[in-house]
Length: 539
Ligand SMILES: Cc1cc2nc3c(=O)[nH]c(=O)nc-3n(C[C@H](O)[C@H](O)[C@H](O)COP(=O)(O)OP(=O)(O)OC[C@H]3O[C@@H](n4cnc5c(N)ncnc54)[C@H](O)[C@@H]3O)c2cc1C
Ligand SMILES: NC(=O)c1ccc[n+]([C@@H]2O[C@H](COP(=O)([O-])OP(=O)(O)OC[C@H]3O[C@@H](n4cnc5c(N)ncnc54)[C@H](OP(=O)(O)O)[C@@H]3O)[C@@H](O)[C@H]2O)c1
Image 1: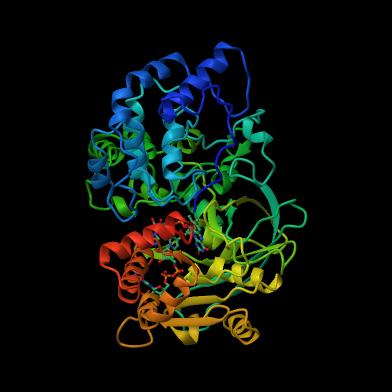
Image 2: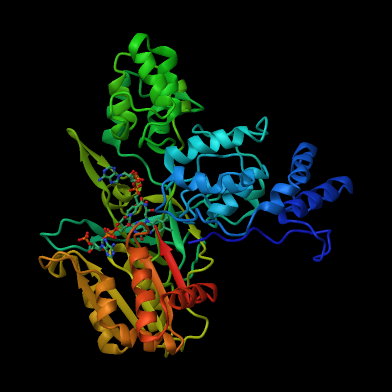
């Protein structure tokens, strides 16, 4: 998933001028400022940026246009090592989560560039990168000199000002959410399943929002009230303590993340705790793990670890991260379900010690949102994930688990538009009897010819694991024939393992049935990607 590109900008330089994109951006900004022009989208960079930029010509020239660290499975230290000696903005990119997931509102490269060019002041937007990314970005940001703006998004609400984002229509970005009404949740797993995945519906009719299949839906969740109450109790603070015109409880409910405790919270404890606890708090604040429990310290566990130390509620809130929206692939089509958006959401719950931890957004949708409740939402337009323009083009969709979401949307769209193209879905999950999402719909679509082929893989029905890519191998010859006929191929779901394994098997299939060497098959698959015939929405 990648975000929408920024609006086209005024460029005063001819296309042929021999400048790197950074130099071009700085020069454009310089001319706009010097000539007193004002153009939405052009930011005149302060002189020191320009000087640094032009001084960096050598560095920019060294930069290659590849990003060998752009691999979400590669640990951060390795990514930084690969980026060593590169210009600062490239090292900033290497610090990102590398998923191009769009949750920050950018892809990884554009987020790094936006920070480097001081168009983005928030360093804490990378959800997959978490604390590790934030820590690294803070250090790299330090290399830029004095920050021009606060380095973090504020956790407490700021007074509304007329920002450039305010001009963006409501619901079109995370900065300008709209409101939609929660309609319903329906459990997709049958009793006996170890998963809990919900079909969720929202009513968009009063939000003015629309979307196309392939887009994602952003949700601003609220924290679980039991957790909020436990935090208030553990802090021994008054729930109605006033903070920025709201109460402590309200800010804890929808303003701040109660997930992993941020470094700033430990820093706060290091200022007010004494003795050994002060040293531990300091160590935790710098990413060390003095008691071997750092990975389990969410906000409540951190308060409990430093029980008896009582931070001021306002200072406490300031030390927390803002509660971020979460993205979900849209699993419906407006053409078959006007005014509605559907999602397919797997709830995150896991136990640490005596407490079950809850994924904030997935359990907000799975447990807490009430029918009719208005929720802050936005549509994140997909840039490189969508149906082919020609409805006759065959499509192959590989989506185990919740990865099936956008493909349900594709199929609904193709059914509603009577698209003549063939469709092939690979779906898989743990057990056929419990985890076969949308079984009736897919059977109906098979019978109606909307779904030409349906290939299933159940990973836990037999002694040995069997995954979608194992099924792909079995039908490799036909899969190759579809590709040779110009099919588009799509993958959605788990980024860390599944997407890579599927790609590996696709290369094997191309090599075997397309009579190519492995290198040629890799080049073939890369070419499919370049041409937009191999699209991924992985998270
Ligand atoms: C482009 C995109 C599309 C997406 N589409 C979908 C979709 O269609 N359906 C869907 O369900 N999700 C989807 N996601 C994922 C979704 O956005 C959320 O990340 C997911 O729902 C979890 O968010 P949460 O707020 O519930 O959990 P959070 O509060 O963010 O908690 C999740 C975190 O908990 C921790 N954690 C989780 N399990 C464990 C464990 N067992 N032990 C220790 N720690 C653990 C991890 O640190 C994890 O990052 C998508 C993500 C992206 C980026
Ligand atoms: N970024 C986030 O915060 C976030 C949040 C939620 C989910 N996710 C990711 O999104 C994925 C989606 O979760 P989900 O509930 O939809 O289901 P899932 O956990 O992806 O499982 C779906 C099916 O895929 C199988 N599978 C596991 N490893 C695989 C591999 N390497 N190749 C192919 N198939 C594989 C599973 O089998 P087995 O389980 O039997 O091995 C299961 O049958 C999760 O795996 C998780 O990594 C990320």
